[in-house]
Amino acid sequence: MPKGIVLLATPEGWRHSVLTVEGGMVCGRLADVPVNAGPAEARAAAAAMVAGLAHDFHEERVDVSWDPPRTPDPGPPRSPLPRPPPNACG
Picture (cartoon, rainbow, N blue to C red):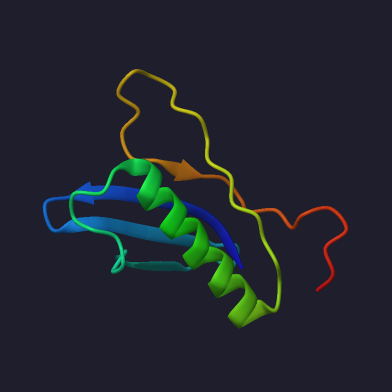
């Protein structure tokens, strides 16, 4: 199960690292996000990817939320543990 996401904007496009509760990591590029996309578009694509992975591999529904920026220059967006929505059926 995914437990967190880190996004990084690079000259080649947005990169992601998905951390799992089992201690693993899945890294790659957000392929459907344009190189010049902003953080909001990257976060939306990453959230959809994680929700799809949770469903496909664990038959779970998760909601992804993002930590608010801590400084005027927050660095890469991070996501805490996706939580199943209330009353979710698995």
